[in-house]
Image (cartoon, rainbow, N blue to C red; front, side):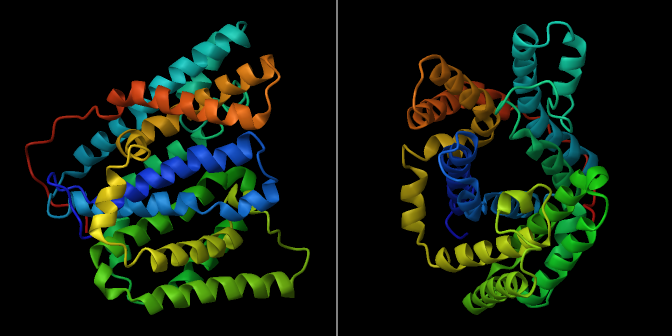
Amino acid sequence: MASERANGRVVGLDVARGALMAYIIIAIHGMFWLHLAPWDRASLFLFEMPLIFMISGAAYFLAERGAKTPYLDFLARRAVRILVPYFAYALVAASLMIALRYRDAPLETLIAWLNPVNGGAGRSAPMLNWHLWFVAPFLVVMAVMPFLGPLAARARAPLWSQAIGGALLALAVDMLDETRLGIAQTIVFYALWAGFGYALAHNYARYKLTDFALLFVFAAATLAALFLAFPGQFTFNMQTNKFPPNAIFFLFCCAWVAFFLMITRGVSGKLLNAAAQSPLLTPFIANGYSIYMWQGLGYWGAAQIGKAYDWDKFAVWPLAIAFSVLLGILASPLERIRLPKAKRPAVQPA
């Protein structure tokens, strides 16, 4: 967190964000979308999204501290950053689906894709929209960060006890009608992680290595106790627990997050700077959101080529990665569109 570039960006956050984007696009979606590994085993590595939201919460704190940005200005600017790349991808995907599958329903297809909550559901093809569930919850969580972040930063309870509260909240939301509130579960779940990221950035020094270690032990022990006490009622398949996210997935993520916070605590600025300049990582640092967005078309296109030529899935995989990165880089200027800043200052919500 201490190492910064000349332009004020925190290198640690950039490296973490880029590494996570690379991990999602290369490993996670390779395993799940191309079935490179059994889903039950691969699901034990589904730790990435809580970390993404934590980084976003921390980045919000570092970007907005002392800025006193008017709330509506912040909301509009964040919406542009999230939705412009989405709408560009949605228009291309919708056009493709209208041409190939839904010529008899072009308007319905276009509407389905331009709705970020729907994300093209019912008017898509495999892999083309599987990742778009992220957009609407991310937009909502960022919209509440001016209120949620300062509230989370005031928490003084030990991390393990905060984990109890988070798990109970996830359990309470999970007990509601899933078919009606699936998106609400997702928003509440990831808002907890974004708030935690804000709190970490706000006062990182107050957290000790023992805090993270106790959180890890608590989460791992609680999961083990639940599975032993209630055999058959819970599944270790975290893909099932993730959609929508429940209390089991929350505890699972607590263990992974605590693990990463422990092993990354002593990473030097020199190592972070070297990682930030790595040619393997820089595309994901500079164009991460665009690559994430266009990976649907990248994987779908590679799968079509693989099907046509009867390729093995491990041959399709590198082509899918290459397509995703190339399309993301080409579309990345849309990611950098910004609204002009409002001239009149206002007090930020506390």
